[in-house]
Length: 224
Image 1 (cartoon, helix red, strand yellow):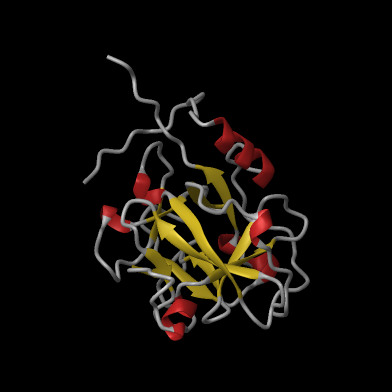
Image 2 (cartoon, rainbow, N blue to C red):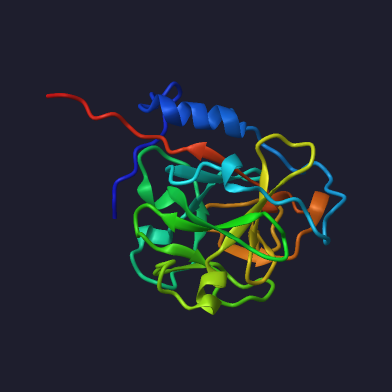
């Protein structure tokens, strides 16, 4: 397993462009949250984001706002059908880095666009393999050009902003129309290793359904 380097206060982010992306997305200091702004559109049609508002083809961390932990490829796995989990965010850890790729228009949302969400470490994509509530999200091989349409939908995700919360998003499956959440397993706290599943949007009650993006924290190489 790849050794993890803990993120230290004042860590240097190498790429100035990534810092700019973080500023545009509203990424800021980690702040514990137990609720999110009420979304009166919960359970109905919502506004979805076009590619112009999202950092396509950029290495990002997907951070759950409630837990402040990162969406992670469990156990640094290369295997298909591995269930995704959340883990503490650490620097230079590619299993917790993701790239939004291949935006496509998804009807009936009009001009909204969906994306493949590819893991930097495994090269595999988030996959809604079973479009039903409470089913875990896995990773599968992704090839947008050759997958049949039914398989493409299982790997396409679109984003809607949380009303009244800058830089915070719901991530919705184009296949099931449910949102990603951290499954707390009926606990009041969210822990490392908790799986990622999909459920209907719960609006202000869905505090563990809200995500933000942050530029991947890259530890600079030291010259020797």
